[in-house]
Length: 69
Image 1: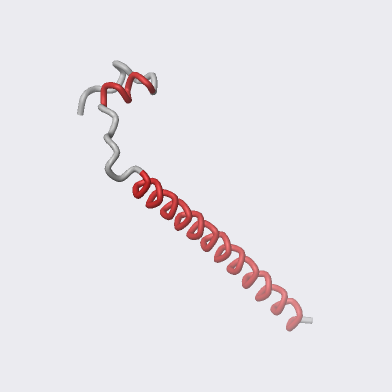
Image 2: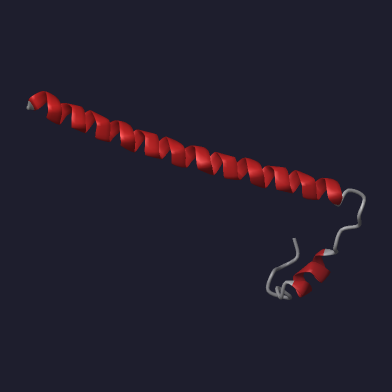
């Protein structure tokens, strides 16, 4: 009886560790996908003029709440 109980505990610990590892890997995949998307956007926008800070603040409704850098 003691062997079965300790095996179940060990299996539960292993499953919890596996679950945590899967969660960590999913987050890493999401981070890598975000990085890929960011690099693609940077490449698409290369050479295009940026938006002046004051114009961006107004468009985002932050004028004049956010001070100049």
